[in-house]
Length: 291
Length: 291
Image (cartoon, rainbow over all chains, first blue to last red; front, side, top):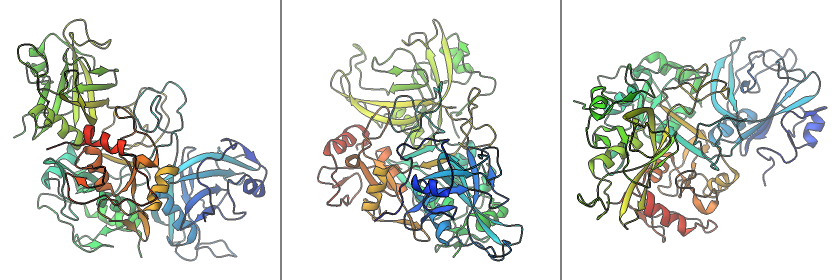
């Protein structure tokens, strides 16, 4: 029996302000009265409340870096141990990332940002967990962070479910899309894929449709925020879609000698393919979900 | 040794008009002087010229339905046999679809659309082949069609390479991105994935990162143009990313009795999962690249 409801709630509008956590709970937005993360490892995270918390949190309105829970001393509130990706709320947010679940976001009056209400709690709408990042907090312990982006960044004027058209005269419509895979070859990823003849560097599989091969150029240190990896062949692998997903989500990582960590095997690396080991180090330290 | 150059060409601006096909060739936009498709099955299609041709072609400016070549009687210009996905230009366009290659588009004066020049050939910029569709032409024979969308429909104001932010005050910047996978769970695809416990209905694999499972909701009759499939559980399968790519690209299809066609095996279908056989029929007839 599911405990949480996911996504938009009937009758609740973005921007609506609630007096306190109890009102937020009664509106079914966020059930927990204290915890910032609503959810569990089985269902995922349905809602987060930003209200003070970690000083490193970043809030740019439509993108948020949110820190998971745990590791703090109850009395001093100082971090005294590593945060754990397996802690219930942290795992719930990972589940939301992997499964693409909508996460309701609410900002409280104690949250320091220009988007916060001066009193009470303002519901900010639906976000998605785009990626996660393990970092060392200011007290030297690991913290689990999540990068969320707001839904509705794509619109489609006349089709139901997919990114389609560039015309965006009005406010973007919110759309409920399922899976969209957009693949664009840069010259760089093309060259890497050709070097490996479109075979996956992890499993040696090659997807082909009538002899037309398909592979994906996967960035070890991901492009864009918050990882800001480089679009350079020293950061690109040729992978099948399955191993691309697993690499992105931290399901395995790669040692500097190309042994795989988290799954068995070894990365096949062509003699002409120079991989920057600092990208591997980054992936091991920040993206791999370690046991 | 590659024959074709792909993507934007230095010094060539969108909207530039060329006097004739020879001038287009000299600018390196489109090498063939007669054929509408520039490319080969090895490298893909680097450029197409729209200039009359098939009456069913659709040109909405930033989305184009383009018909492949072949099947016409030389004299009467009537279609007298099926077009063939293996014909060099048609295969080249499929390669561009699978590999996400940029395709230059140029409109000629004979092309009937409000985007065409009154004389000469106007270079329209970079498009991508989003999907293909096999249809029955007006003379009763198969035609091979391609749905192209214009590049630059996404922008990103401050990150280098990925879809990130919703702010689109100005004209979208053209960005060169590589692979972006955006997964959103609708309630429907979520229910199907849960029904199968995130195991692929084709290969029974389940991708998991620390016990968090990952699968994709794949539409049999694709959402959006030009297929316009429904977002309904009777049109959704639970697949691993590899088989999702293959289904979308027509690498295999499914008989009404759930035998797989194009690859060996049988689709695993849960007794509670009612699949609409008209969606399977659509996929077999319009998307599967038949041998």
